Image (cartoon, rainbow, N blue to C red; front, side):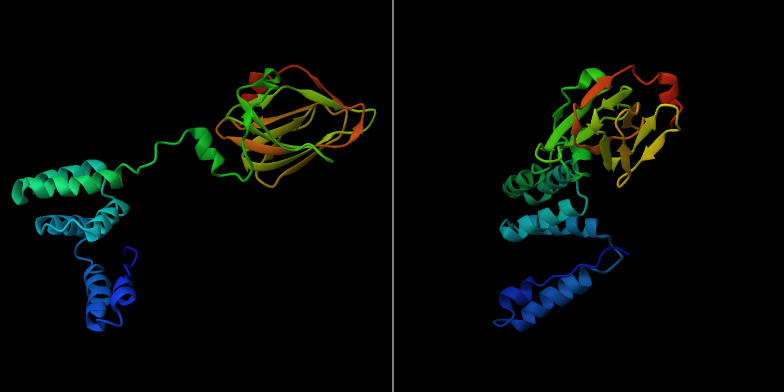
Length: 251
């Protein structure tokens, strides 16, 4: 059973002035007729639009039912064919009048999102701009500085299959890095140890002097916060890329 349709416009606008009309509008028309299951809601939307069109009604009620038709799955191609077909029987002026409203409603469809924009909608932190350290990565990555005060924090985002080279965070004292996964799925590995899968909420503490790499899974975008642990004479040493054989074995 589809979602129950409810309506309160009758009572809101005419409840005191015409309570019977409000009852018939809200409880009978929308409460019973629109919820009757012999005809699906999409078909009812089409019938209603054609009925209003045939009656020459092109006020706000037509706009409401055109929007309702779109919300219930009537596509731009379908509404164009419906109006064109009905025009053959009810007249060209009515067809033109309905098309003017329909064109505005279906032209509101948002353009298709890029994979990057779609992924951005799944995480809280900004993806940022293309990573200026991209020369040390296989694939495309992005960097968004969140704060550079006290403990610097960056959001690093990897496209599917992207990973950084083996590297070491050096420091004379203190230092190192902390990673907090905030989106997608990725991997972290220290030299000589098994890789660790990263999913939202995973925290990785990387001591200074440890050779490691991290990046996205082959089939997933991936983002982590990178926190630079305070230390003396800190610097990163970038090394060789992760071998294709080792990366492809991760899954």
